[in-house]
Image 1 (cartoon, chains in turn blue, yellow):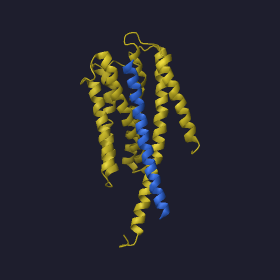
Image 2 (image 1 turned 30 degrees about the vertical axis):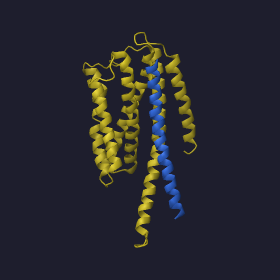
Image 3 (image 1 turned 135 degrees about the horizontal axis):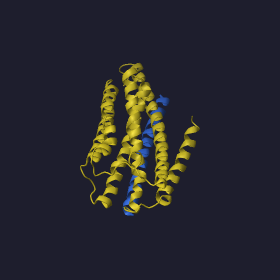
Image 4 (image 1 turned 180 degrees about the vertical axis):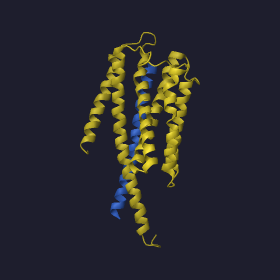
Length: 39
Length: 229
């Protein structure tokens, strides 16, 4: 069972980790847009 | 479109939860391998989703080579990135499944090796896109993607035409999967397809916004009087 749960958990860690990087890139871009708006 | 995204995200979450329940609880237990066989419901749909994304990447790259469409270039980039994520899942869940069943984590079998090569090709594609900033980068990436896509049918058909450690196809030619397992497999594939579509959608919007910001910054730098900084 530990192999089964490990496979499922790692699958979700990979997807959530990737979504986290997308969100971080979006935040960074939002800050750049705000900086451009202020100019 | 702004309202459609959260609704689709919610539906995807519901479908993924239902697919998880089907895979862990409702699907029958396989007699030979036991519970660990349920890795199949994540491993196989992830592989199919990765193949489909690389196919879209191939088509988008061809379109870019033909008419230099910016939209096609963004689509190619996005599908390669999300495809690599799904291919990573395949390469990680495969050895976790192999260890209790074959007794080894990895073997240099044709199917496994070609899948690793496929992953490396698309990682190279992403590295090229990330670290090369010349105007020819999308063109070089499109050419690499066209050649890289040749590996997809090799991976897919390797278990049809060659004797490999990897199991034979369970659906289609010669496949004999229990219909209840087929149903759970297809539910999970539908759920992962929705997830892939959702991620590609948000990643596409992000890439468009990024390019708009870069254009604006370049324009500002041009208009800024010399010697101000």
